[in-house]
Image (cartoon, rainbow, N blue to C red; front, side):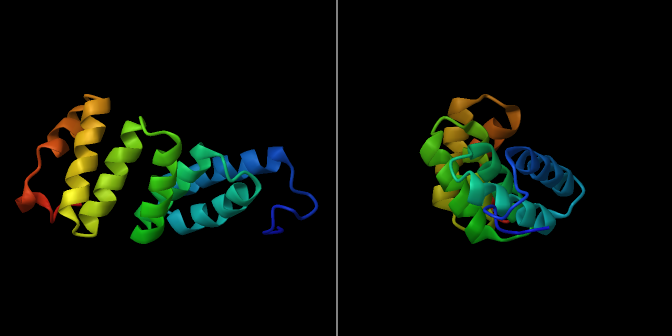
Length: 132
């Protein structure tokens, strides 16, 4: 299968198939496989926030924290009211042992969405930085 989105045979439909397959791979605990599929989708559609969010989740699951941070940040530039992206970016910072930006994004997530998990995380103290 061609990796370059400009290669012949790549259509919008094949990118949708790749996106759905990447969702399945991530759910099946193959985040690196998901990233590979999503790279082509994002090459073809760099403005697709859903694909970027899925790739960010895959990077996080693969413990590739710097790429995850970058992707979550791009999502938040486009969708500053995305509570899940704030929460996930906070978890990324938490795993990097960066409590101050983590706390900020946990609180933003909780302010945007009163999800019990977000509310609990928004009140975390420095003793919980080891979680995640």
